[in-house]
Every structure is written in C-alpha cells, then in structure tokens.
Image 1 (cartoon, one colour):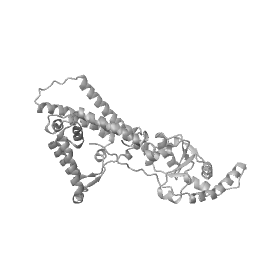
Image 2 (cartoon, helix red, strand yellow):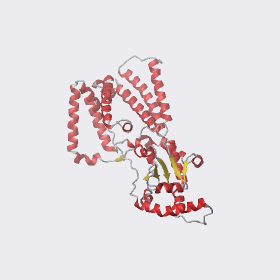
Image 3 (cartoon, rainbow, N blue to C red):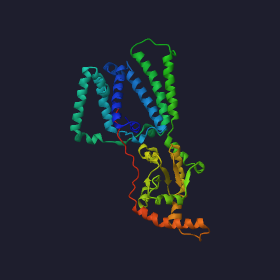
Image 4 (cartoon, rainbow, N blue to C red):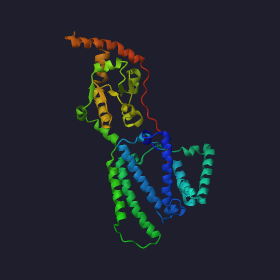
Length: 397
C-alpha cells in the first residue's frame, strides 16, 4: 500500500484494503476496455489510443498526488523503493515485453484482467509468461552478467535533466495534454474518419480545465525539504525565530535526575563524536531524520520535551527552525550548545569566589555535576544513529 498507510491503519487491515483496491483496479481496467487485445494493440497500429490516454492520465495524476502528499509531509519518499536501473537489461527486457505485447495483445497486468472474464488467449499468455519466468530463473547464472551490466543506480528523470521536480511535473502534464490532442488526430486519420471542426464541448472544456489544474498544482508543489534547508541558512531569521532555550544548569540537573523521563536529548553531532561522548537520555539524529517518518516518530511522543543539542547554539537553532516548521512541538535547544555546556559544567572552574547565596549554590551544583555527568556518560550504553530502512513497495503493471 505504500509508506503513507502503515501510520494510519494496521498491517492486517492494510492487506484487506489492498484486496478491495485490487478488485476495483481490475474492474476499472475492464471497463476501460483493457480486457480486449484489439484495443490494447491499437496503440501500436495507431487506430486506438485508449491505452495512452488511460495510462498517461493515471501517471500524471499519481505524479501530482505523490508530490502533494510529500509537500504536506504525508508521504515519506525515503520509504519508497525505486528499482535500480541496469541499462542493457532494461533495453532488452523492454524490447521483449513490447514484442510480446504486440504479438499477444496483453501486458502482464491486463492479461490477468482478461483472464478473469474468461478469455483463453489471455490464459495462454499468462502460461507463456510463467514459462518465461521459470526459464529465466533457471538460466540466471548465464544471464547474470548481462542482467547487471551498465548499472546506473536509481536515477530520477528530473535530476538527470537538472531541473526542479515541480517544473518537470508541469512539463509532463502539458506534454500529456498535447499527446491527447495528437492521438485524436492520428486516430481520425488511421480510421479514415471525416475531419471534425474543433468545438469546445463541455467534455473538452472539462478535460482541458482538469489538465490545467494539474499542471498548475504540479508547479506549486515545491521541494519542501530543500525550501526548509534554505530557510535554515538565513541567519537573521534563525536568530529571531522563537525557540525555547534551556539553561546549562537545568540541562545538567535533568540529565542527573534518573526519575525525570520527560526529557529526551536529540543529539545532532557527527556519529564519531557521539561515539566518544554519549549523553544520558540521548538519541543520535541527523537532519535527514527530521524528514523521515520512522525516526521522526520519536519527536511526536506525548509528554516529552525534545532538547536539540549540537556543538554550537546556532546549529541547534537551525535544526529547531526546521523541526518546528515541520510541525513538531515541544522543541527546545541547549543554551550555548554543547561547547558552552562543557565550559560551564563538564570543565567548570570558578573564576572568582561567590558573591551571593545564589552564586554559591550554583558553584556547588556545577561542582557536583562536573563529577556526576562524566560518570553517567561512561555508563551510558551505545546510542546508534537513527537509521531509515527502505522498504520495497511492490506494484504496478
């Protein structure tokens, strides 16, 4: 079902919902005519472009929908598995599938749709596909070198072209609208239908209006992560942004208080530094974790105060700005950063005798904290960085 659903429903209900969505998907395919081999191969011969219209529409709607969910923080693209690209196997596999599509009249998905309503040619194609899968699996040692040749990773087209994702989406929607118009012209010529005078019927106006809405929507869904990272580099804004600040004395006291379970320290230092000095009640974090659903759940625990720590206070403020813009609550930073904490607590040396009772108590507390906290750090168990595991989400035709 994808990375959005597990946060909303249970895993068992997820499977049940997937079953009904699959049934609905098959019904829509059948109603769109995808159970007819003549309609499917019509794309290759130019007399029927239903396949292009349906799949292009599904593609651009899904693209804009994914961008919208990601923009509003409802979908974590880090959990979406993107199949790696092996160039030669992709080209050869595409040729084989395209040839099979033309000869058999079905692709793997539509063959099951047609078989479900009793079409024997689809059943034969499914059987042939299973035989092909078996032969490939048994002969894999022979094909492995070619199969894994020209590895390109998991590129995205907009990154390859060097343009923003929302600009690429806008271009794709406009291209789809143009393709629909060209497809209609080709159909009329191939089927030798009389030329039609262009008229703005309600259906045509509605289609163009929906397309324009999709195009404008696509261009408006900017990369939220990139925008927030750029925002956090504005020093004037970061320094003026309202953020709760915790003093070094309060921080030290709450670290030493074993019964205080309302605080959790979110440590943004490099992993090597954390390995040398692990603070009590701390979790290693990276800026990437703030944008990921699984790690960021830690920041949503009720009744917890999340204290962001880094070597300097400005870095803490940048991270706190990002977190609060993402909607996280109960965020605080450590006054002066860990550099100030080391100077005033871990390496405390009074510069003068106490001038009043308050300063005397402060000196006593810091002298005790200087002894206790290093011991707590030594006893603290290893805190590994929060890692984001990519889960493979299967699907498609």
